[in-house]
Image (cartoon, rainbow, N blue to C red; front, side, top):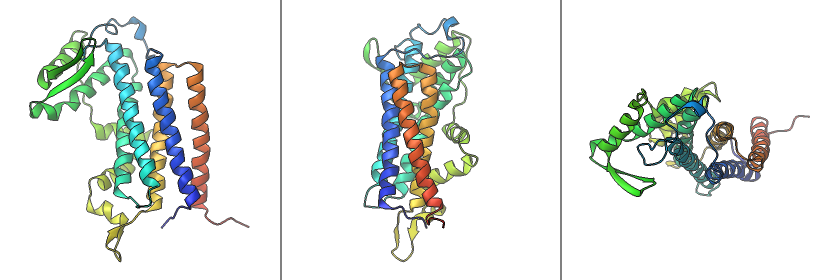
Length: 286
């Protein structure tokens, strides 16, 4: 069983905090600077300035949701860093936070990976539509913040607005499954993506085979496995880096914002590599 040295734990969690803070700063500055999303053929589409289902222009709707999604992923990462350095020795909670961060990032990744402007709109709309499947069953309303201020709309009517907006441009909703999106994101980084995501999900859901990895039979309690802490932190660092790089390419920020992100990304990458090498080779050779 791997046990992290105190200085390595501090470095690892500091790396998570640095990368998610830099990522959230990029996401926030994308709104302050009013950067446009750069997608193939965006200049030629007619829908981008039209008011969408949420009261904003369609392009602003995409920008706002991407920003909130990146901020949500960063907040999950902050929680992971804080619990990873806690003396309590959290285990399952680390898997839950890592999974939450990866899932949020996978949503942004899917939209940012669009091959055309229309596909970007379809993916954005499809996520909004799919998210409301369960609220629809319970007859809930959705709150959106548009040019008319805060407005509450019944979920069924809101979903109809989404479909109608796409239909006006000859487009349709496509399937947007979160498990598939998250696995695909991890597959862009790791060879064993299905196994890695399945393990995080199983631990987060309290499944017996997964929680058994953290169980101390003598103490009859869960115990922290530093190997898993390293992996969860690495997943968040590497997934955040992967998607934020796409975010910058799509929004084309000002030079200062881009340089700050690149510097932090480079420093955290070096930090993570050192920790992983020390884990794999705990005793110096020669």
